[in-house]
Length: 409
Ligand SMILES: [Zn+2]
Image (cartoon, rainbow, N blue to C red; front, side):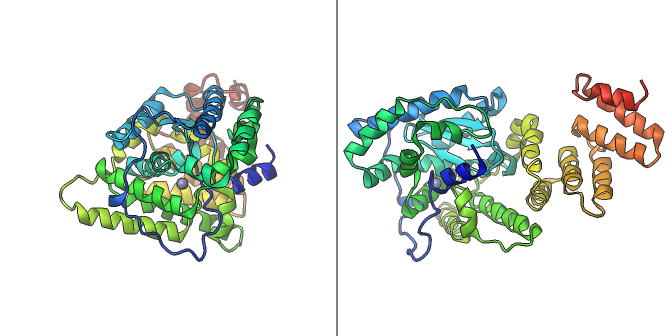
């Protein structure tokens, strides 16, 4: 998909808080008042809803077969365990698929399929933040937002058209994003399902906070997710010498980070904490999150760094480093400077690589980068030692022969 068509798709699709944010009054429903409308093992009875599910079931098969799906048992078991913890007593019907995509995003489909992006997994700092987004998306499912929206927008004849075009199937693979697959079905009709109203977004936020609280997660981590995203977008805009505008960002994202959303989540969290003070635990479960995502974390961060958006990348690395610097973060800090390549960046990168290899979890590539930097500065012995360490850690690296050549082997 070209950048433009991807943008057009995103602009009209999924949780479309993109439209009509201004001038609508805050909504009354609070987390405590909301109840689930969907039992476990829910199956739709109405023809139009069944048609909707059929299409989504086909898309789910394509998603499950896609080369963008992250097939890591540890991560998938962990996502399942977090959703189980959140949704216990509500439903067991939500299925989560983690897809490679550097954009921060997550989406819910009416049949219980949820998609989360690696760009989301790269940015969250603990399990409570993960639960905030999983809980929000589950809120869309448990409150039947997809089908309610669908019925608001479409007549029965349009439903039939939707079902018939779905027979064409989604055959587009690769090329960057699973949105290809969704577009392969019918982007126009999909977009009408997923352009949630502002009221539904607010309801999903409230439901997410309710689920977090019931599961013992610290509810204020929900607003922290958006605060991090807003700060990152501000940093990205500043690096491009542009003014940040959360409305312009919304065209690229299904859940645009806005001050309004952040404020709403803060208010909900305070309400829930006030209601249940001292009665329930309030955890972030950072250690569990770190253990489960450690093997993939470097690959998640790398996707962002490769976008060469230095303002956002430096913000991300520094934001994650608030929980402590490590070898992965220092290496990608160095990579961000190397790719930015402004005056003084080469030195900043060299310093970051040298710091990276001080940590046990430095990626092998950090030794390569550190080794070449040392050779360049005339420290031949130390440089050779670092390059040998790289070869030791990555004997089958694609550039192993080149590195051996540099070593004169
Ligand atoms: Zn939403």
